[in-house]
Image 1 (cartoon, rainbow, N blue to C red):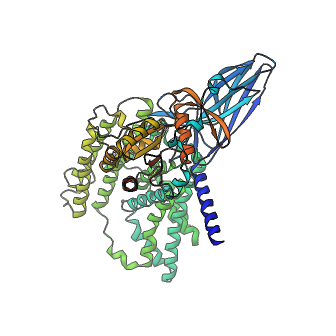
Image 2: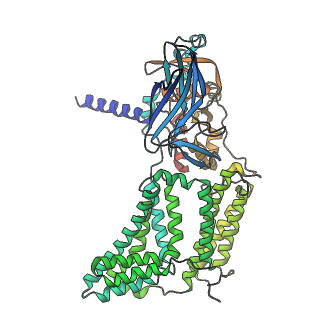
Image 3: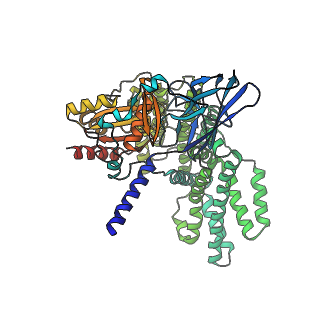
Length: 640
């Protein structure tokens, strides 16, 4: 009985594992409407899981899979125009495709108009669409539509049947699952957002707007209280009030714009151009060109109100006063943080970012209230705080170029291609290094200040970073800045040739060659419209240890599941008890991935022997180079 239970449990886990790899994030329903005499509408309405999006129509060549309608047989009717998207689209610039894209989140709706030319009509066809999330993309997916009777075409009758496929096509789902779970990246977005906010709060602490206030505020709470416990409680309340104020700001931003609208704004060309100009203004302020402050009557009004009230309200108003008077230093950091975290698409992303920022900002007030003796060890206010502001100015100017790059690529100006962007960053970080060494002065800097040891090491890091980027001018990948720099295809002068290219793009030909050479096979299920596939190829495959393993030890077969090349003749196959027709090369490779490996998302990497059996677990989207090396080496060890 015990063995039977263990066996049953194993089968159940295996079944769940198979089901887990077949993703169905989009479910479409179809209906035929007749709004008026002689006309009909075929309506496709899709429900999309959270985190996924379905691309709209007519996105152009070189981009993701556009939604489209295909009619295979029509009698008594004809199509009017092309498929039309209905509802609220999100429009954004996609740097990987170097183009504007449109897509739906939550719900997608498409309508195909039909003109009726007879009382009785029939139409047989399908909707094709592409869907992606942050880690995976689905192959072009077909939603069949049939109204009336349909007979198989002569080409389909003559098509290949799946039982005539080679032995290497045989399913190996159970064997693959026996190796364990697919390697995929873990979702650390919330932790990342919180960390960004916390680092931003720490930076804000060391600015002239905040640092001098810490000892004064803590001393005030301790002196005005009759006992130390009450002073500590007031300081805790003050810190908690700071957290409440900034978290409320994050929630307010989301409430005003909405998570999806904020995400769309963050990739909108006009908004990015505006934010570029805003960051340049903030940077000039940090350099000392002028002082940015909120109207003094605002902070004075809140401060006087705090003096007139007592209890928790007065402490909260004091915290609100701090938020206002420190705006000139914290405003640029908060603004940049809110735009960055908005790209997560999470409705609570801005709030989590502000929580991290506020905790870092409030921490000193509570800690020094608990340990007042630490106040004596605080560095005194002075010129070092201006150094912090200037350094932040350089960093904001560097990030401003990122936002200008998005607008430049969207409008096609061509003024900020990759080498121009890198040249500006090299100059900025070199100037930052010289500033930290005291070779460059700004209006509020002290004259004749000695270079401290921390400043020297920061200067060393900045200058080294500038030197690191120099090879990028000739096409080096520069993985450390790949998330900020324009795409590699915008590079005019590129000497870098150490890229990994597939030896075969046909499964059967590649397997025959692998048997002849006695090498294992690496299958790369990818797509022209797969963003994360390109990220893996740029960030992981270019690593020397990965590149040498793939090129020298494996036969790489890359299979594009969205290849629209028609097959010489359609293939009739049976899948899940139903017959279907494979019309394109992409259909064929997508069918292979589903039936042989029980998966349908890309990127998807699997290592197999010369008989088509898996050598270890599969691999999905994870940019950890060492994990990928371990994946490849484990496959080699099992093959040998």
